[in-house]
Length: 243
Image (cartoon, rainbow, N blue to C red; front, side, top):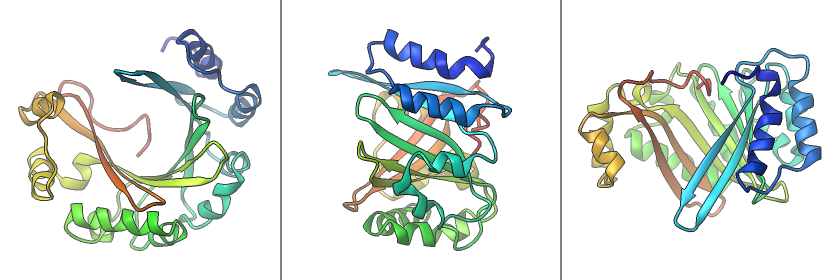
């Protein structure tokens, strides 16, 4: 955190190698650095880690400055048509990349959601878009248009190693969507989600707070729901991600 934002992308790439990850391709790193060049940065880059019994995997996140959406999309031709269906005010906030799998994810922010903002991008994703809209409606208990009106929300699109689109994800701040922790807990229980693992139990006890809430759908129509938790004493929000 003490490093200038301008050098964090290089530092993140170096850390990937030190952690034993597949290195990020030099040409992709160079192009990401070009996207950040000459623009103010809020955080520059960070690494995400996923740790299981079978091993570790890492993901590099690169900040995309305002006004660089067109240049960022130029790296991923398959996503350009889909991005054109997003509201005009949408902004490409960051690009995630998993060097081990060569998968990438483009994260967009819609500053103030308005009715119908999701329909065009969801329709463009076919079965994935239909599944996403259906799961959001099931969880909210009403159309997303009602639950999300006026909120800052995010959509991301995942690309496989060939650059082809494979999934769409909604991203929002749980406390803004549901109003309170008890209401969120009640709603998740009502729609059939079980919360019996150690971390959810700490959340139910009030020792953790809900943060980012996301719903993903793949081209096959399969969906998954994710809830981020943070220590109750920490600053709750997504100021870094911007959603």
